[in-house]
Image (cartoon, rainbow, N blue to C red; front, side):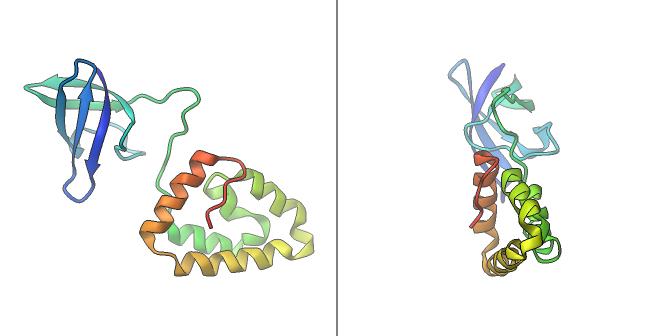
Length: 147
C-alpha cells in the first residue's frame, strides 16, 4: 500500500504514516528499508500494513524529487578548510554550480578566502542548524547557499 510519512522521532526511532486508505500506521526504524536516508515528514512511501502497523517501508522517489542525504558537518568543514579554494565543499553538499565558480576563480585566491570564512562559520554553527541548512541546500541544488 502507498502512503505518506506524517512524522518521525529520531530519538525514539518511531514514526507515523498515513496510508492511502486513510488509516494511520505507526512504525519502527527497523522497518525502514532505505539505508541511505531517514524517514522524513511528507515523503511518499510504499509499505505492508500488518495488524495496523506499517512493515517493510520503502521510500518512493519521483523523477524530479531530490533524495536528501545527511551531510557531515566535520567533512564539510575539513573540505572547506583544505580544498575550499577548489570548491570541494560545494560539490560535497550538492551546490555544484558554486563548485564550478570556485574552480574557475581559484587562481584569484578569492575562493580560498571565502572558503576560509565559510569553514569558520561551519565551526561556529550548531549541528542542528547545519543539518537544516544542508538539507535545504540539497533541495535548492546548483547554486544553493548553506550560510
